[in-house]
Length: 356
Image (cartoon, rainbow, N blue to C red; front, top):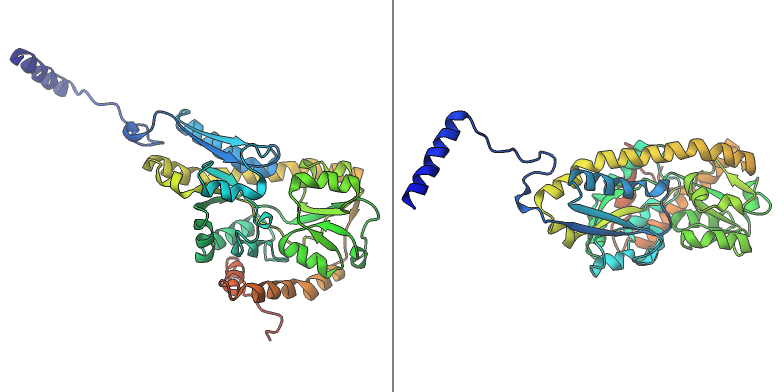
């Protein structure tokens, strides 16, 4: 035994003199010593792969590439794991580790996040949308209501502004919306109601049949990708292209419990890929618009409103709906503070209708 030990010492000294080095750990995911052999995370989402879900597939691709497949981030489409309206519930009971959620599918579960569905927010481009959402996610109310479900927001899908597509006579004037049954949730639904429309909130996968059967006349969706992804153009006659009543928010949420159990390098990995994931999402919207818009203009009637009509629409109803939302919620949480957070994120001040 003593000879074996002496031999080991001699070999170690020889190795040091020869400049032997230990192999360096991989720099992208850190020291492998505390990595699980195989880790699988499941994400719940409805529908099929589409430009608006590029964020999900991008996360999966980046994670699996960076970990050589040791962390499998599996995206389950088609409500295979949960109904769209129940994804937060699934996170809360540990049914899966991640999900896509949409605020207006369950306003009672995320009342503060509904601020992002209010009409005519100062979101004119991608950068505005990103800045506003990041500021809102950092607000204590949003973090509190996500924690209630054991969830944390990882990234937004940065939905574009909505437009409306429908069947029948096109609403070429604002008064033509009177009596139309329109799928529009949250603040967009509220502002459409001011025009005389009848808003309804259904999941995206139910809209095609509703328009086809005539139980609804039109639907508001992120333009242009969502209308085409859900094939609404196949059963529609017209679409608006400059109404832009607002947007909504569909963030990717993670289970706090599952996240806290990740090794440090995997948490760092989630942080490091976020910028690339968002860029993949931006490009997906940009590229699909180049295809969809010419096709829609060829097949359907495009409805555009005059600047005077749009100014009247926004002036009469925009801040009015926002103030109604604040009044409805100000005893429950800092609703006005959330609205002010939205505007300050793009260096603007919010003024109530009564302000001088």
